[in-house]
Amino acid sequence: MKITAVKTAIVGNPWKNWVFAIVETDEGITGVGEGTVNAFGKTAAAAIEELSPFVIGMDPFQTEVIVQKLVRDVYSEGGQIHMSAAAAIEVACWDIIGKALNQPIYNLLGGQCHDRVRAYANGWYRGDRTPEMFAERARDVVRRGYTALKFDPFGSNWRIMDPYELDLSVDIVAAVRDAVGPKVDVLVEGHNRFSVPEAIRVAERIAPYRPTWFEEPVAHKHIGSIVEVARHTDVPVATGESLTSIHQFAELLSHNAIGILQPEIHHLGGLLTAKKVCSMVDAFYGVVAPHNAQGPVSTAMCLQLAACTLNFFVQEIFDEFNVEWEQDIVTAPAHVVDGYIAIPDRPGLGIELNLEECARYPYRQECYIPLFKPGWERREGDFG
Image (cartoon, rainbow, N blue to C red; front, side, top):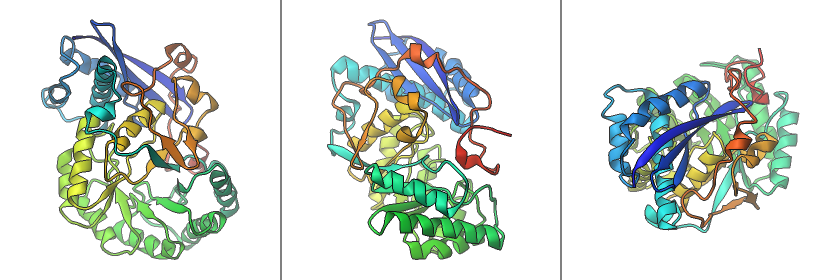
């Protein structure tokens, strides 16, 4: 089998343009992958198209060599955009392999470890940044059957917060905990906002509300910073979504300070490298919660990884709180039932992309999350 073409599609979801790769073969089997990067829709699609000549004529079964050609052979290091483009192509190849063998991808990456995976809700807190709004929306999430939910209570703050902003953020965490009760996992998102001392101060203030984790409290570029935070708080720190290589994970894990890692399939160049990272985390007795803040193809990718990963913890999902038409652009979209997602047994990713439906929602430049603008929580894109 040979790859004959690599095509792209962009779907204008209001808070993030989704970018998909479609890989075609000479045997008529087509695979799909996702390479979405916030605020870089056209750029990510262009990266996929520019990388495509490296794989035309190759056997899609050779995923290890394909990723090496897409990453090493270009010599330039393009970070998250580059790796997401490589991932979109690599995952589409896995989709092809699964279809050719009539097997779900997880059976080709070690086999099925879980019949279903626990999910946590994200994207549910659209509205004014008040404790009352967060509490009301959190209660709705629990009514839907979720047993875990994640949110960023910190508004548009960066590096440090004044007393009012800190108190408001803590009040939001307290309101959510009170709304959902003691048995629901409350996951607090930091979005790389803080300095090390501020992150430690925030962690101390939210600790009484027993968050399951404090995610990405400081930026990922200086691994020593996230390690410093983790060693100065009793609140578990989660991180990893922004890392783009196994080498960065190796450095982070070597400190033995963080036990909840969040590999991002996009940023790691695909499923095989993400699986390797999960094994690295297991070697340090850690668990993984794959990052997933993109579209429905990304969700399908994460389910394949979670299904074959023994040290899987919990899966992020936005799908139920996205645009209503999201589930129209793929066949057999994921559904959360009583807080869990059943693992599909269909070949490949287990979904197909509806290109006609995708075309109804074209790219729009304003479709991205402006995380440092007041009101970004509404997830309406760049609104001013």
